[in-house]
Image 1: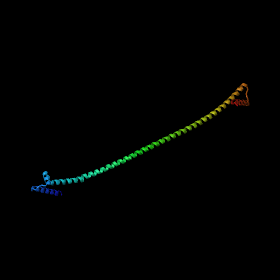
Image 2: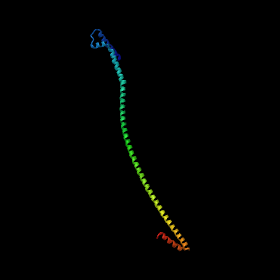
Image 3: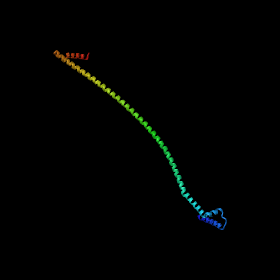
Length: 195
């Protein structure tokens, strides 16, 4: 096909040269082509070459490049959409985290208050139990003191009665019988007790 076009261009060029050689009046286009030295076969060959190169570039260079650009544009758009989605998820996660931290803080405050209340109740209970135990110990000690006092008073009465009898024996210089001794002891005891 290329050779056919070149032959056609050469033939056209020979016809133009022949017409000019025969002295015919050159038309406007012919005159311009002659003045500027334009050769129709070369122009047609250049147009044909340009068309072939443009087609090859379009088919094997521009089309893949444009497809790659479209694909890259699509990837960028999907990447931006993914980034927006992640940003929204991050904001949601941050809000949930803040809410969770607030709930945890409220829960910890509640637990601390409950622990303080339980500790205060335990302390009050222990204090009451200690007071009851102390009162029991004091009451028992008081009872022991009272018993010891009664025991000491009884021992003191007995000792005083014995001393009264011994003193009376010495004063009277005679031995007392058991009945007299008992009578003196009873009298001394009555005087000591104030009856």
